[in-house]
Image (tube, rainbow, N blue to C red):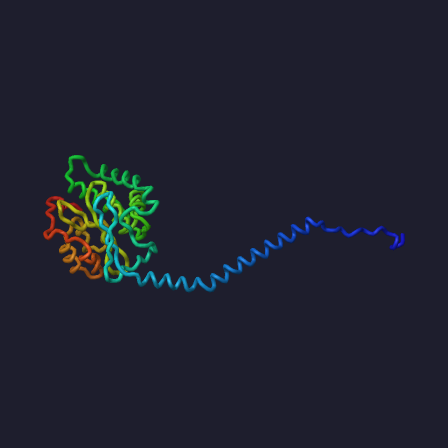
Length: 277
């Protein structure tokens, strides 16, 4: 059959509807590419400056929060020192501590924290124990059972106290949070302290006993010569004298005393309880 006589196939035409859909798809693709290009350009132009500014703000921030608890219902009171704030721990990048449960997570978990603190108190004390003996026993319960890992979540003390009670692991902030929890449940008035200066951060508590303030810190020291020294109801003078004997740990309990109430002038007589290790 001659070629000219063959039936030629008609070219299939694209319907107007398909053309419209194709144009819409193409428009969306173009819009998506434009948006992507805009954010990429923004990241290139601005992110480096904002990162540098944030780093500068972090390293130049001044003051250490002074956070005093009057009662469970009291509000947080803060005051800033005029010296440089302590540097962040090498193993963490969390923000500074807050004394009251101000975050949504802390507020929602406060009852859980109190329940766990009461369990520790019940397991380490009896109803006939004096307030001092209850505090002493719970202090050693935390000190002897905690495994020091060097890390903690410093976004909220309530959440970190729960973490400590559940895992029995953490760092000085975990010890601080757990002690704060049990002392509050037992009805003691406390104040938070953060170390002034130093390569890392350190936290402990002031606690009011018999109308006098004392330092309390269940976080253990790793140095052999500190094996039999523990920070349970210590005075300002006791911390100063302990610091004079230190080499690598000098300044371990350094703080601005003008921001806190003075402790008792004489060491507390703990009697037979001092023999406990």
